[in-house]
Length: 103
Image (cartoon, rainbow, N blue to C red; front, side, top):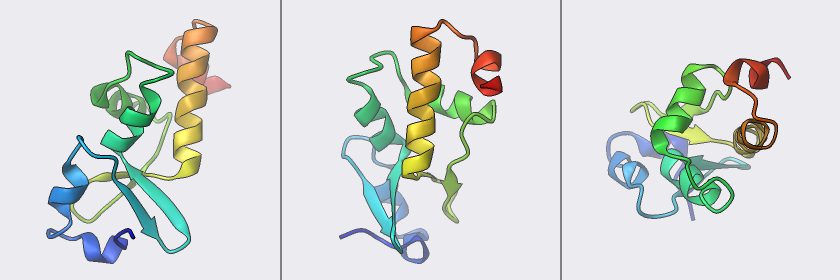
């Protein structure tokens, strides 16, 4: 099924880093997505989404994905849902990032 966080060290980093496939990891009872998988899933509703925009939203502290020991971002369902809300507010209510953060 998926890899555990402990199994992901350097050996798992090439699989996690691929953005062409939809990578989903099971860690305990929690399903986590890579940044590429998140962008791929969001693209239907948010066609302008990119990996760099997701990284920017993290930099602005609007989302806080987990990190592997190798530094790869792993998004929980809560992270994903928060990202959807932030992007929807920006799109539907024309809110700048500061306003999205305050809600």
